[in-house]
Picture 1: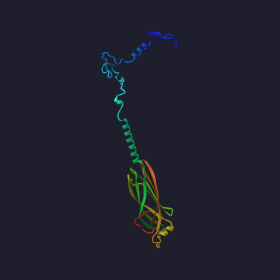
Picture 2: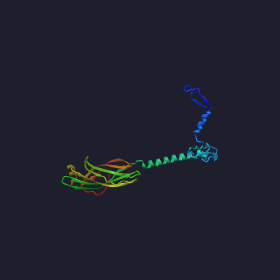
Picture 3: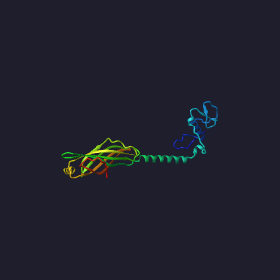
Length: 243
């Protein structure tokens, strides 16, 4: 049945009734759930075999799960979430504990020997020192560069630079023997060291040590100033500790 509407803009346009519009809408959708035995359809999986659906439209089906289905209510959900959070927190703490940067300590231990050579104008000395380097980290530490300079009476008398020192393994300590040449050209100190009337020719040697290290993808510089006494008048091969 067709009726005319009272639209003022287009009075001659017909309007369908509710039944006609519903019929036209249903024709645009495939006839799901038909009860006939048409061989062109498949058995409807949601109708227990009583209905038929067109071939090729199986991916358009919508499955309805009841609200009381046990699959919608997994058991021990809170327990699983809590255990997962605890495991993640524990792993994070372990990573921070093992990878957190710790100290690398540079310590002079003793003067092993002092070899003295007299020349007409200078006093040549070769001082051998024992140095300990300890690594408190859980990763190896690479020594990039080691520098040492010796000062007598606030004047630099010798320098040394080492670039091939071995790495320090994790949680370990290595001892290194470092030799530095100290030529003294000061006339007053030369006279003092060469004087036969003085039995012990004590000089206070200041050592300024800097060391560049690399670990955990970053570099760091350590520095240390230490004082030690040496005898510039004679050879000394008896080690004595640095105070």
